Length: 344
Image 1: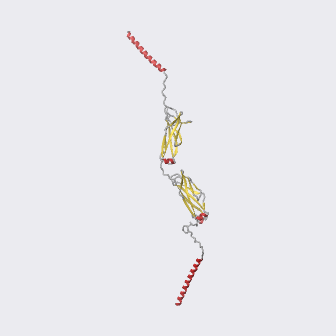
Image 2 (image 1 turned 180 degrees about the vertical axis):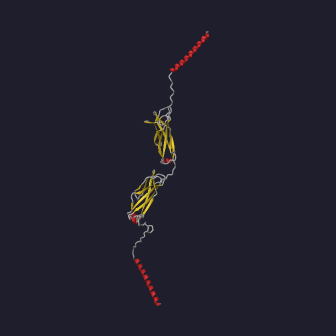
Image 3 (image 1 turned 60 degrees about the horizontal axis):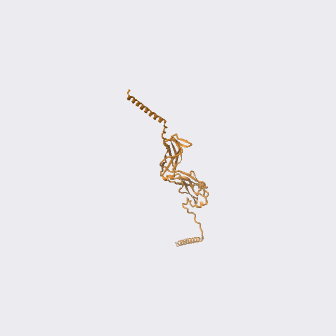
């Protein structure tokens, strides 16, 4: 074997040994170095709120709007829940929440949502006259909760409902009747006239002639006194019957006046406004009084002759003079007739 071949073999062995040593050293260095931890993901707690209202159009005063709120936990970088979740609205009160994913938790910490979970909340609102005047209802809501010890606030969710313009009319009408209960019974019963001591019973019918419900309905009758009604509130187009609690007893003053005139009005309230009907008047005439014209057809005139007053001398002289003149004429006619007979 030549010296050259042996030298090449030694070089090859040393090369392989060096490569092995490098590899072993690298393995030892790797095994002896501490492991490097991967970076933790960034934690972003987040709540998202959406809001709707039903009905959203054509509303009028007194109508109710149901608002629906959906709260969702959109946190990233964590599996921890957001607790104590509530929804507040600048217009709606009494909002209640219910889980929609069937995995949310109601605990001593209130409503809790894990990332990706959601809950539905509802609240009701009654449209007011101020809303009608404004033409719409605009309100804003937010959801809040706790992530660990940090407060989390959602976006602001706004919703608008529109009010239908309406012609508002609040009005009442009243119809009034009188019934006479007389002591003359069969002689004059139901003739509509009254005498001293007779009783006059008053009845009324009040009707809502407007477009709005009227409350505190009553009858104001100064002559009849207290009046009782079956219903004290009336929807549009409805009526109620009323009656005077006590009848009116005809007095000498009524007899002297010749009639009993009675006027009444219906009253009620529409919100803070007082509603008053046009007056209704009914008249009961006194029997055989100056307004009882069933026999003479005259309005308020007295048929009796005025009594004779003063000195009667003039009347007596006039009567005597007339009798003397008539006697002279008769006597002259008799003499003339006798003269004619003699000549014949």
